[in-house]
Length: 179
Image (cartoon, rainbow, N blue to C red; front, side, top):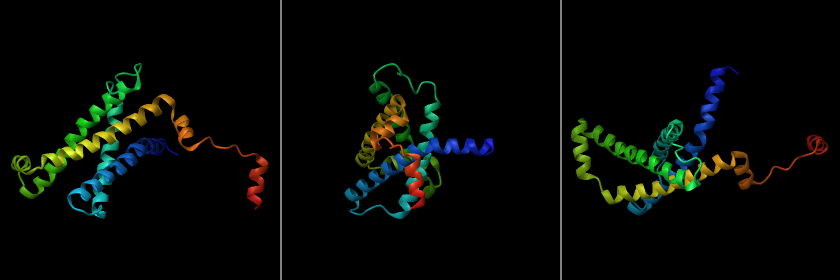
């Protein structure tokens, strides 16, 4: 495999966990939002936009993880880094959430300044805050899981959740192939 393909594979494997996590997290938020405000489930078109949003946030998390100040408290108890990273990711999520609404208004109005003014007048702040609160809780859970995986190592975390893989003897593998 060429170096380019191996680098693409490496980046893909790095972005996969946060993308999957936020894909499910965004679906939980969308489902709760729709059940409360619309009384319906999640539409298929919503799933596509949530996939795009989770891919973007997954990549943002990876980029943020490369910043020198992101792992600000490596020698302190895990809660320090969890709260620190939750705060950073929350600020990013608020900006992205606001820009998402701004983009929708911009498409309809045509002017960015007019779209921003209209959005500030029309946004339902309690609904916006409710979505952000759900997202903050999910980001916190994500940061806890990431910090545990960082400290314990991914193999240990996998064993804790799914158990230790049982070694299979050569004789058992041969018998399984014959069957």
